[in-house]
Image 1 (cartoon, rainbow, N blue to C red):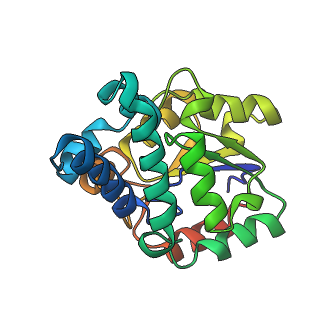
Image 2 (image 1 turned 60 degrees about the vertical axis):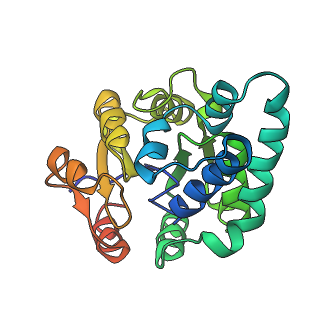
Length: 216
């Protein structure tokens, strides 16, 4: 059975239940500056670029700094009550640390929001490398972030596993030729993910933990 030396995690919908917070933060800005709100589907359609890029495209010019400040103020202040780790995630991270597995984050989030989440939930110290949407030229579904991890630790693709909840995670993993474990406990694209990765998806954190134990 294959043994992994490195494991890469997405953040939102994988480690953390932050989707509700993200939707609320976008709509806080939309209500204040556009006098409207967006559906979850409309917000998801904006995903790809980082929050900063999305906000700059929508609110360029003099308004941008105010929008930027309000966005991150709301995101940080509401994080403790609107977002958390999925139960069992700490046990997985502790297991990987015990086994001396090299771990990384690869997320489409910007660095500012990523660090807010990782620090508030006290899990930043579990990761040897953090690659955000601000750290790559080509965001997911590009494999650039995965390749940065491979290059940094000189891993071969078959020594690394990507764990994520989205179609973009699957596409990036295939491009980098690393194995993908899809988690669908909070995925907004659950059915599509199951179609694209029918043999390697997990409905609960416990299922993933049991599967990982034999592979690290």
